[in-house]
Length: 294
Image (cartoon, rainbow, N blue to C red; front, side, top):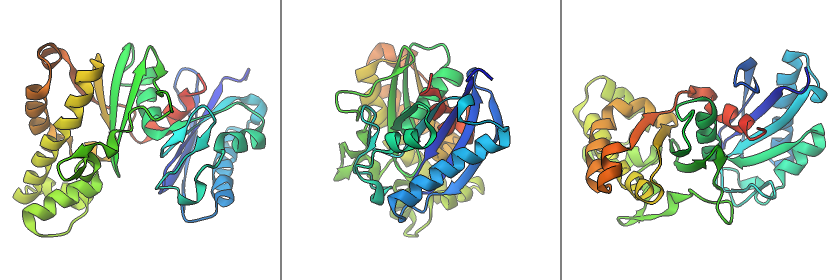
């Protein structure tokens, strides 16, 4: 097979998604999904990762000799240069764990590590919504908010590997992730309705036409315009890509986001910068991780 197979691992605090692609981005076989169980010891989580890779290789009837490399996109922060998970709230037992070296030692192939937001947007730049663009700014909206910058098909990691970690940026009485996250959606809904619901439940209520849920998503869009405007005014990208589980509700917050965003941008970006949705769906994480090998 001349080592044309790339394997990607999307490592989150809740689940691990592993799959293989060709160098042209075609998904090979069936991706493997397993629970992370992030409370487990780091060696047990490492074993879950290596087992998921082995299952992917077994289905394709290949060995490590057929694999060009393995990319891992992990919930962050991480240090891409050393391949180490840093103090990651979602993976409490893996703080300062040299994950890249551990996986590389197990399989004997090149292994690359970056944070999951970077990988998702990188995959979209190579094979998805940002294909052919030289400057891409991306946001992942889910449990938290992630941000990534890709220039000339290279992830911009920054001096310490934490470029795009905007989640802790001050906003109102707290930080931006207090509003732009699944918990943030619940917080907005609670302030409007006085009731506690998950972001998924609030999405389902919006689908039913619930006025309080629709107002929640409208306010979410208004809040989202703030970090988008900060970032676009600094980076001036060709395109902005939105991905992550929360974009399922995009039709409910798009208008509020767009109208508030354009008011906050410099005149030329306000006219020209496009905001689009990610195209690779649930597979974006492991596809982007696999792209690290390229």
